[in-house]
Structure formats: C-alpha cells, structure tokens
Image (cartoon, rainbow, N blue to C red; front, side):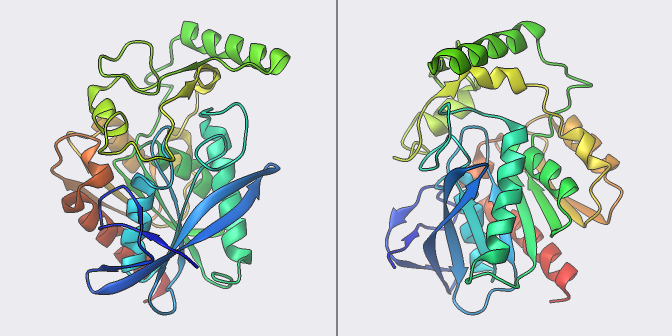
Length: 313
C-alpha cells in the first residue's frame, strides 16, 4: 500500500512510502471509519515492528490530518505506537455537512468513534488506546477521555481548554451562528467565511499567527480548505474545562507561556485529580507547536513516556 510521510515536525505530508524517523522506519496507511453515519478518512502511522499501543490524535481548529495532528502521530509512531490522525466530520476528505463546521461536541464524538475503529481494526485490535490532543483538539480530547473509559492515558499539547464560565462567548456571535444553522437546515445553504486572512477581519481565527500557518505554504496543504462555517459560532459554549474534574486516567500537559491562554491551561491542570505531570516549554507562540521539531519532539517524548508507564513498558 502506498504510504504518506514527511520529515518529523514538518506538519505537511508528502507521498514517499516509507520514511526514517530518528532511525526508526514509519509507514502510513489509509484508515477509514464511520461517525454518526459519515465516513471519516484518516492516516494510520505505524512503527517498524509490533506497536506498543494505539494513539488517537486530534488537532487544532479547522485543521486536517496532514497538519499538526499528523506531525504528532508520526512522532508517536517513531516512538513505537500505532498513531491515527484523521479528518473530523465536515473537514478534509471526510464526509459531513455543512462543510467546515466546527463543533467540539461533534469532534469529541468523532474521537470516540475513532477509538471504536482502532479497537476493531485488524492492524490495531487488542492494543490499548491512548490519546493526544493539540490546541483545540486537546479540549475536544478532554471531553472524549472523560466520557470514554477505553482511553487509558491522555497528553494535551498547547491545549486550548475552552472555559465559558470565565470567558463567556458573545451572545451576538452565538445568535449569528444559530441563525446561520437554521438557514442551512431550512435551505441547505451554509454561510462560510474564511478561517484565516492576512488582515484578520470576519474570519474564524483572527490571529495573524494562524494566518501565517494556514494561509501560507507553511501549513496550507492541498487537503486543507480555508473556510469556516458560520453555524460553528452556535457552539461557542463548548466547555473543555468541565471535563477536567472527570478525567480519571493519567494526564500529561505540555504548554508554554506564549501558547494560548496559559491561565486556562493552569486551571485545567489544577482541576485534574488523576495522576498528572506537566512540562512548560519555550515557544514563539502557539502555532510553532504545530510544526517545530524543537517542540514536537519533547512533547512526543512526554506522551510516549506517560503511555509506556501506564502500560508498564
């Protein structure tokens, strides 16, 4: 089977077949499953030899499997794990409508369905399952981990742990999203705005740093669409923080003072009552966690060490 691979930490995947990662051969195979009736498409990154465990990953807002989630999945495969990065519903190669629709609730459901698929797939059946979430994906993963006892450990990297109690969304923005969703349900027409733009404006992610990744060749892979369904704003009350107290498995947090909302990360970490550890790295901002090997490698080391310790390996 043809594979897809890239230099560790690149964040972009190119067709090569096999690639060497720190002396370890990593291969990548297509992986499909269903979530709420839609087919989802992923890439299963496999080590050279029997994997220690399966790892399911989830990435940042609007991202696809060839970006940050894929970089971390490859890094975990290089460390001996079968690691899955996939396009959530409505994004990339996966099915689902309206396109570019971002819902933390739906993405947490996708993660749980990915676990079901990993448990059943002949390449990973019988393997324990761990989890890695990056940026918004760490918040989505927190909800999935809290709700799914099959996930045995969790690492959050540069996590955005949404906290509507301390930072409630603008009611006008919520209403805009609900109105757009109602129109889509009535007419099938979905209003979409850019995910990023060079000067910000009416976009899903107004940070200039986000544009410098998603809006340039640095991160804008062919499978990525620079779009954001306005109906997504209706789900701005997604609460990752509430999941912290319900996490019952070992947790590792990797963050930076320059990543998104360090106070939320600290509060999330303090609220988790299970076995936990933290590593604070020096980053330029948030986005270099997506593609800088100087951040990806130590974060992947932390996750691998946690997962091995839970499994006694």
